[in-house]
Image 1: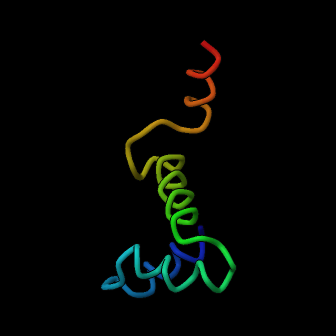
Image 2: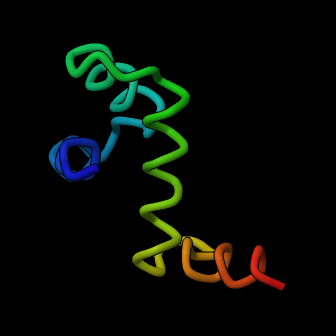
Length: 62
């Protein structure tokens, strides 16, 4: 996740999909998997709205 964050911070004109498209293949990770993980990391850090992993797990128990 940090590689994408660093790429976006280094080049403010770079869009998220472009950063992920550049980095994911280098690591052998599917683009959509990386996008999903990155989006969840933004939720976990409070940068985006949504349910955290803990909240998802708590909902699954009930």
